[in-house]
Length: 416
Ligand code: LLP
Image 1 (cartoon, helix red, strand yellow):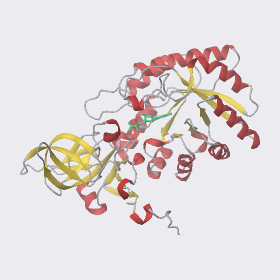
Image 2: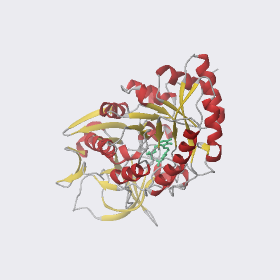
Image 3: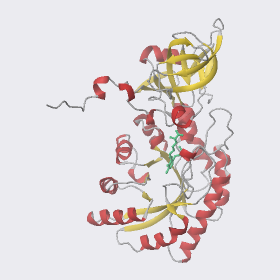
Image 4: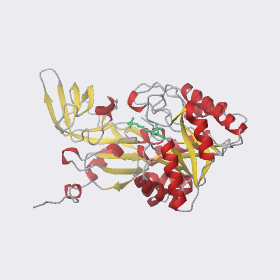
């Protein structure tokens, strides 16, 4: 929890707005973000890397709301995208295509075309076949595509296996042992311009040492390439810095930066980073209301109006999100609850074994839900997706309307 979410007179607030007031005005479930927390997180990165030329490319997948993209664009951020859809969002939000890097293992020809047309900064290419396709698409368009190869440094990020990406067995990037050959090949392709090298070893890392280990391995390749006359303009070390959900102790942004900068002493390449979670994770909460309290034979359930379709992380990764009562009420008895949603799946839980003093109708806040919350939500069980509200000091702005059921099935057709 950042200081932007705090209790005032036993009422949980986002900045100067009581979450209860947000629930009354916009309903639940709703995602609530703090502009100050978002700004502060971005400025920590900008400050920590200000001693050298660096571009902070927000990983759009972590939270793609236009208002958030627009806020980061105004702060000077670039963007790390993984689809044509994310590119359209960045452009619609006023982002600068010249500050966009395009990651992902499965870029289609149409997406390459779209990104070349927009004039993005770099394609982070993840395979030999992709190099060939990009060269071909750029050739047809009579353009030159700027490329970086995502190299897999084979470093163990020591994080959840689903979000660890830098090991040999992962689908991401080109193998370390193949990288030089592919760089030589790319350098010889007529419609490509080799501009950088990138890596991303995983997400929610709580230790800086794997980042440094990856950087060192990357730099060995960079030097080898330079000795062959292939000089790079930028180095992109991806995202992955962890946040505190419960009791994790990730390095501060400054410590993370110092560790990376230490590995880069004496180098001139421009630095690119792709943080997602560290910029938005602790800047958002999911606000939900208790529909029923259901005592069970073995467990007590707090059935809330948010579900796995709204916040998938607990179900998918067994992730922990702190649950706080929006109003602290000393008159209520405290019990241990399973916090679950209305979806018809045993896997539909948001939190296990939480001791809380709550009643039917109480509001709860699932903390640290700003990253991979709304962006991973779905319409399972025909549940409209949540509203999103941005708090700015004492003001609340609806930055995404609650979806309607009619919108969910608008594209569906009957047949005879
Ligand atoms: N760059 C690339 C190429 C990535 O694949 C990712 C995340 C990032 C940057 C941003 O990583 P971050 O700074 O947010 O750790 N849904 C999972 C996380 C999946 C991360 C996927 N890649 C979760 O909820 O924990």
